[in-house]
Length: 182
View 1 (cartoon, one colour):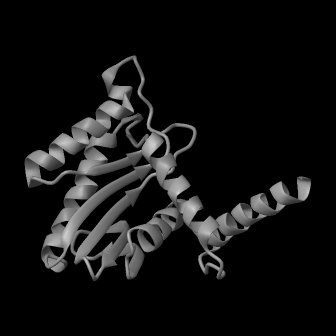
View 2 (cartoon, rainbow, N blue to C red):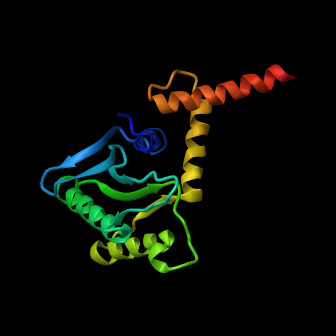
């Protein structure tokens, strides 16, 4: 089944970051895990390793034993991702990204503050590996969505990705409707 969040990130990597190869759901046998999206930009020798969490109602909310588990789960997930890249893609400049459209900044207990969780995850990854985790969340996620929309608007040939084709149709339809009203 098509995962729209992963398709969105794949499209962003292909059209905006100019990746030549994209793999979704890359299974890593050694660590018994999977990476949501990996993109390779051959010209710039970059690898983009992305985890995608599209939780609309709860925001970024992983739980274990009915308790928030964002920090442990995502720190572990990115640790496995980093080890995979170091073992198999070490000739590329790595970029590790977390994509999530809704990350809540609650003012209550810290164990429920998802923005606080992101800060802890970033600190863990920085301390363990010396790597800056890029978080594409909330406003930044929306900016990337708009960037893809602008790209779709400017394209004349049919875009092959279903998500991008839908954006292309919407953008071209908007121009047509605006002109037909006048």
